[in-house]
Image (cartoon, rainbow, N blue to C red; front, side):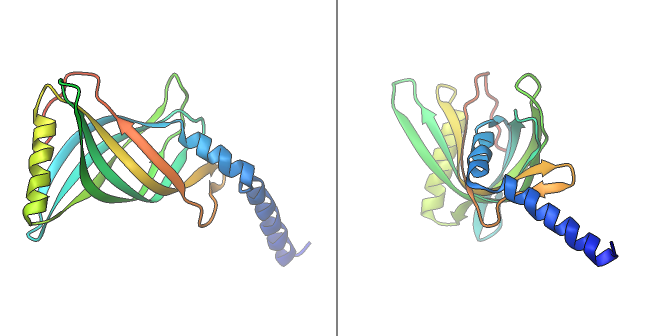
Length: 192
């Protein structure tokens, strides 16, 4: 067998393997794997003024209970903060959009999940009255100790699965991402 035949044979074997992972059932399996991903902490929020707009950098720790490593690519997420007040009312503060280029979640298990911290930059808006009102809502939600805030990430992302020789994913396929983090311990004010 010559070199060209070996290359063609290797490519065909790779395509056959990829087709096993990329059929409809595998897309459902990938979505099920996404169900084993969660947010375990929000470590820091840094508010910055770029001169024409406000943005918040949020350090988020993700955890993966799947045995296989997963990778989010080109994640387009809407970030919101939901507060539950002591009087039973709730409020949703839509912080704005965030784009995460890539997050690699190491594999783990239910007992010892893999974890990684990633920074999401959320665009709050331009320097206008609507953004100032949003900032007041954000400071009130985070600073009031009687509130029970939850961070909501909702959007879509490419999802890849780690195999021994690289990453596999469905070209053009985006998966729905809906993650919520509600702290259960006493909070610190995270905004700098």
